[in-house]
Each structure stands twice: as structure tokens, then as C-alpha cells.
Length: 201
Image (cartoon, rainbow, N blue to C red; front, side):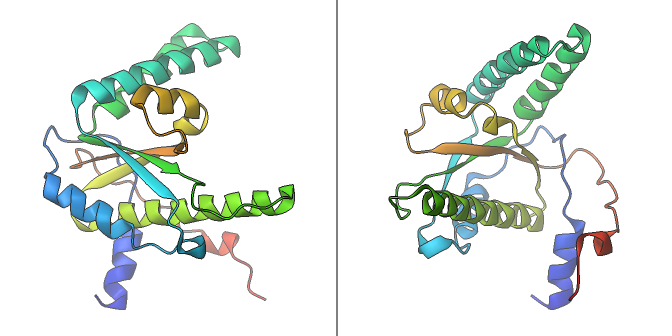
């Protein structure tokens, strides 16, 4: 792949929230996931873990329990019930409307351990960064295959709920949720203000 092709791949990636009612071939899904794991990682420990949901019942169950918690939290915040219900419905649609839902997790099982909190915190941050790089590779690979994705941070607010609902291993810590499928909406235009985010010395 040439430089310009990589540039176009990165620049044309978008968050897509609506998908066609069309399955993602299992072989393609496996290929994307396996290739994403060639990402760089701290100490080469590969702390990423992916829980892949393709069954309707699993996606619906996860959407339901997360929606219930979202509703309870938002109402406790004093938000208007009608606004809360729209938010819950939107969340449910995004999760259940995707062909595939991938729960992106990190595991500290193979990372280094230290006796002091400073290095413990640094080691954890290294694991978080490693997982994020794998997730970005996953997104770009899906995009290159003609698929679309969207990243949802909601599992960060309810990691234990997600882990219990999906019966995930105890060391799997949900970091985010990626919906995946064939796009059913147009891509939005990206902002072009990158200079505001960079300082040259």
C-alpha cells in the first residue's frame, strides 16, 4: 500500500451508527480481529481482549441492562424523563441495530506489577494505550474491508455490569464498545482544524 492510500484510508474513516440488516461473514470478522492484534503493545504483552457478540439475544440483553442503568443514573441526576427515555432508546438502537458488537477490554494479567502506586498507575496506563492502538487498527481494518464502526464509551461507566451480563473472565476490564456492520448512512464531513491540536517546537 502506498503512502497516499494509507492517508486516504485514515481520512475517510468515520463513526457510523446505522447499519444494513446484513451479516458480516465470519471469516472476514476473524481476519479483521486477528490482524488487529498485530498492534504494538507495552512489553509486547498484548493486554487487549475482545468479546464479540453476533447473536441477537446477547446484544439485546446487553442493551437492556445498560439501558436500565443509564435510565437510573440519568433520573438520579434530575434529567427530564422524556429526555432520558430518548437517550435510552438511542443507546438500545445503536447496540441492537449492529450486526456485530465488540466489547473492547484490557487485562492486566500479563503486565508487570510493582510495589508502589506510581509505577502501578503507569503500567495500567500503558495497558490502556496498548488496547486503544489495537482498537484503532481494528477500526481501520474494518473500514478497509468496506465495513463501518462506532465507538461507545458507555462500558467504562458500568464495567462490572457488562462483565457480569456477558459472563466475561474476572480480569477482563471493559473499556468501550464497538458496533460493526455494513453502513446504512452517509459519512459526515470531518473538521479540518488540526493545527489547533499541534505545537511545533
